Image (cartoon, helix red, strand yellow):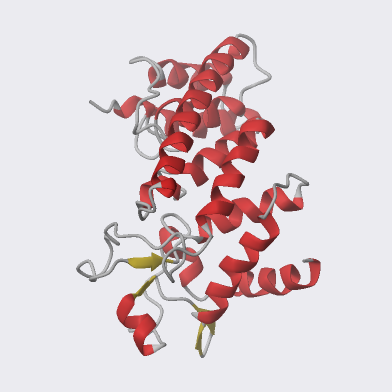
Length: 268
C-alpha cells in the first residue's frame, strides 16, 4: 500500500522540500527540515513499480539533493540513489520490451508525473549522467513513428475533459504528455548531454506541435490532446484554450514555447 509520507505532492516529502528551501534561504531552520525528512522515511523507501518523481526513492532523492551539503545526509542520499537506479532500470527494461512488441505506451511509462521523463529529471538533478543517457535514448526511441502515428500515441485515459476517444490520443500536456519529454531532451541537450538521435527526436516533437498550434487573440495555444477524429479532420475539436493548469501549461496561451521553438530552429 502506498505510504503518503514518501509523496512529494501530498505528503511529508513535499513539506520537507519546503523546509529545506526555507533553511537554505535563512527563513527556516535545518532542525525543522530534518524533522520532516525523518517523517518522510518513517515507512522506508519504496522502489516498487509506482515509484516515480513524486513518490518513493526518486522523490526522496529529489528532496535530499537540496540538503546534500548537510551533515549526515550523504549516506541517506547514497541509499535513495541506489533505489532510484533500481527503479529506472526496471522501468527502462519494461519500456523496451513494450516497444519490441510493437505495443502502444501508457502515459505513465513516459510522462513527467509517473514515468521515465520524471525519473530523468531526478537523474539530471543528481548528476547520474550514465543512466540519464539511457533514459534519453529511450525517449528518442519513443518519438519514432509507429503504425503511422507518433510513438507516444497512447490508449491510456486522457482523464481531463472528456470520455476516452476511440483509437487513443496524442497528449500535448507537460505533466502527462509529450512536452515533458521535450523539455528533458532540450534541457539536457543545452547542457551537453547528448545521445544518438536526440536532435532528431526534438525536431519530431516540435514538428508535431507546429502542426497543432492554434491561434488566439492573445497568442498561441495547443489542444490538450489530439484524437483520431482530429487527425481525420486536420484540426482540433477543442474550441479554444481551457483554464490554465500546470499539467497542461504548454497547451495554454504560452509565449515562452513559441520563443523557445524559434531559438531551437536556429540552434539546430
